[in-house]
Image (tube, rainbow, N blue to C red; front, side, top):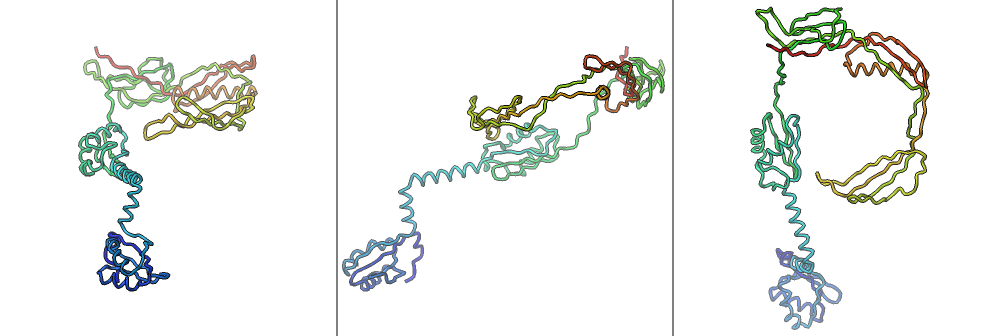
Length: 393
């Protein structure tokens, strides 16, 4: 006979039947309307399958035919459920784990913001929170991405488009900022005056009236480009703009030692690793003394973090590196060049990298107590303007 439908759900067993009248037993089962299948000889008897419900009505037939039966296998949902019930605590744990996993995967965990340069990320997160988008929010409570995009675009000033995309438990907010016109500072009327004594080498007046020309010697505070236009009757004050360069003389007193001490790493080092628990550190590796005569120790702390929280647990590494002391001796010529180079770098740092050193002259030089002393005069072409507000009476 064929296997009945849904036998796996209803449950069935495999029987091994033995006795003097096995064939008579099988005929009696068939006449009783009990469905059996996969009937085959097995040793001194027969093996067959039947549904679990029919198994309990076999006893009269077995007694009548003098046969005995033994269950050799059990199949189907009822037997699986019985085995699972024996491990009900394990099954409950699996069920709770599945429910917890489903709940955790239904929440927003991270929010990433991209494309914002002028708008602060905190402002965007605040606007998203007002629209119901924030960490640990249920995903099913969020609005559609299109509605969120329109709402955030209207709430955030200075944006032309906002895109909201959800991938799993992460939400990405893409910002496209609108072009803003450059805000020019409001300037009050002013003159451009000389900030130091100089000889004008270059002058360009973008706005205002130039009152000096090239090769003019000017003093500190003298007006170079005037912010007043017109005569006494028709006078107008404007913001003087332009560029004026002049030759300026700087005198430097330079002092360079001929011998200098320093230190360098040899490349040898000894590492020590610690387990950090709060304020306590337990050494794990790197026991023993390094044996270095001179050394420097660098400490690296790598705490464990979860999201934005720093846990009181981590690793700390101490790197003790061997150091060798060195002494360099300079010739007077090398010391002179080093001192002059340092003075030039100072001039460029103070007065702008567009300054040009036209000439240099050593006024005085001597060697005393292991040092080279020099007085050097530099002729520099640099910007000499500074602002002077116009005060109207």
